[in-house]
Length: 334
Ligand code: AHM
Ligand code: MG
Image 1 (spheres, rainbow, N blue to C red):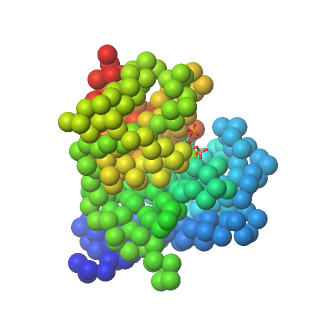
Image 2: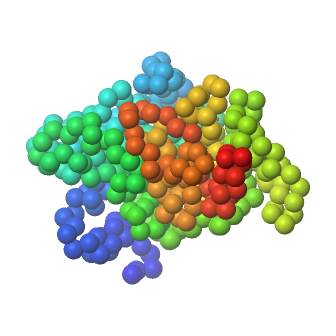
Image 3: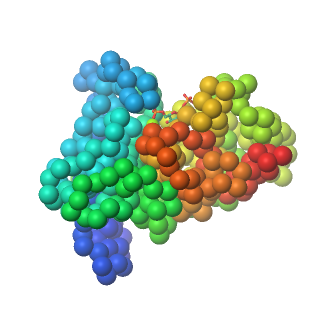
């Protein structure tokens, strides 16, 4: 393997591990990368280009869309649709799934589910945002129009998932079910280069990430776990630091590197949880498990084992270092 590995080289090298590979996955990934580079460019100049602020519309969940949400959605949609590499997509910004009608698209075997710009309410204040994506093999026969069932698959069936973080540097982190690798964007070359091979969650950490302002709305088990995080016990690195950016990709990325736990529980305001199972929960859970961490929706229930019922279904979400999730589960079951 070369020492200066670009993402495209990396994908080609690893494609050789799969004798049946047709190159379709590499083409899909190259479309995703192109879209990520365009969104990265737009995010970077957001303050200059009059593209911050609300777009004046709401998404299917009734949340205000930011101009950059709309832009990122269009960019990913056209990059994936135009190249005939996927048969359909689901996006946080679209009510229904999108079926790509071209014959090349209908013969594509993958579907993509994504949140084109997560945490976009942070854009105006220059906080990191991200793109989250999840890739499945379709269930219906190739050559036929993609159907709802192709998108409503449990997270365990993902063939790949990842995120792009538009942060102090831009990174793409992904897994095809064989570990997690991170690539940093080199803007002068226009290339993603392998910078974080084989990313692994530390077994434990000393950071908890939750919107604690909503404490009074949380279930009792979560409230007790928060108190546990705050107790003094040097043997377990407690009290933990509280770190919450309010941008899932950024909070997750930090915890993956340093060890930590991210919590978005059910609450009296969001009885089902706030985050979306298909394009926020599942891809992050796939990465978390592939990096040796854990991802649950409740005690003993892995995110990846949930059978989705609808495209924009919400879920409680707990992601992080394995030992920290195991401790949380004790509080959720008590
Ligand atoms: P979005 O998809 O509308 O951007 O919402 C998802 C974001 C996550 O990035 C973040 O972790 C969470 O919502 C923050 O929610 P809250 O402000 O309720 O803490
Ligand atoms: Mg989102």
